[in-house]
Length: 464
Image: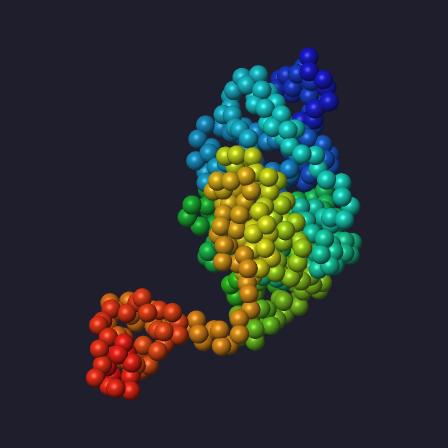
């Protein structure tokens, strides 16, 4: 029997007693959990663990979405258990493909499942141990040690101690949902649900029913009662992402809920008391939105009691390299060979690039480079940032010279080296064009015989 020092995190709504016993017999310490929050608590810092995510046990879509942040933990090897046909769902398929070592279709023999989890655990154990360097800051799933991120971590801890609404502003891709999760996990509501809803991703005509739910028969196709996201978050936290994209008619309904703390399902005749904390986030300039009439000022002031500004990646200095290495560790299993890290030109490009897509763009570039790299180290070319390796300041004279040379090259190419036609296009004489060719060292591009009857012009200079 194998030594009983391995930890298994068994995520299921309906755990199998037989499978649990099988794991115990094979030397596993099994911890059964039922939510993303419990998974994060079960994972011991720095200790490798196996994970079995039982997607066949009827988790709701928002619960499955919440598991994604858990599956990125670098010290757990995950295996998914799915029902036949379940992976036809695109979101589930992406979750399993991107974060799990393997999946099994249930019903499946217990030994097959145990072996698969053992393999995932073994692969994780082969990795390098987690660093205990205290200089690296972290808050939940966020990583950073620059001044801006340390200030953000302090703000998270402060606002988590209150129950007031929080408004997170920042550019797209900066990690506003991770900040919201960190606030929830440190609040008194940590044992209750965290329910996210992207206000910009749901069609306006469906947003009311998504937020507040509906009764059976409320409209065609409403075959049973549906609990809305607001009611599903009762006792916990409701995260309204991209609140700046919320339609005006839904803004009125949300404001009424914030005032009364009651929801009325579509087609219903009574109201339901709901106790939730609201955290909102947007990349929209809310001052401009209110001036233009796209967002109600009374709703904004109810949502923005405490405000947190998410720093863009370009303002995080040394964190850019830190995050890139963190992503490499997380996704390096996708590589066809063992990668040593980043080449010097890649590090230079990471710092020179402006990162308009912020952390989300960084993750995508690193993941693509991991797959496409053909060497032992990721280069700037693998990151598709080769032009940012070295950015040298140029003088105005140098810029003019480069532009002049490019214009001449293009004109000569279009006219197949015919100086007269090229000069006419450029608005200069043939003599001037010839002199420019000489000064730029471009004589090789001319394509005409150079003959002139003028005695004051060298014989090699073309006739004007």
